[in-house]
Image (cartoon, rainbow, N blue to C red):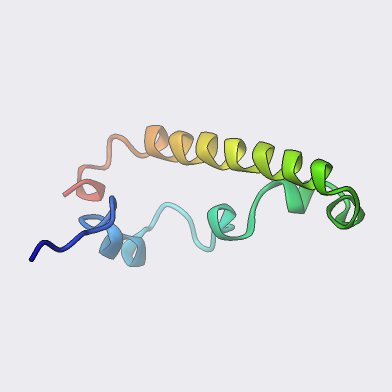
Length: 79
């Protein structure tokens, strides 16, 4: 029987020992656009909400890539 591991199964323990940031905002869990725009925009038109969520996913992907580039010298992050 095959077991499916997540894509970050090798590096998930290193999150506990991350010394680069004291308490960074978890944008992957809570989102970026929800913190930037008024909450009233998410209670209105469903097409607008879908478009804002699409932009939010793209921003999260960009920020994840920026974090990887920012920490590329820390070899212990990738072991």
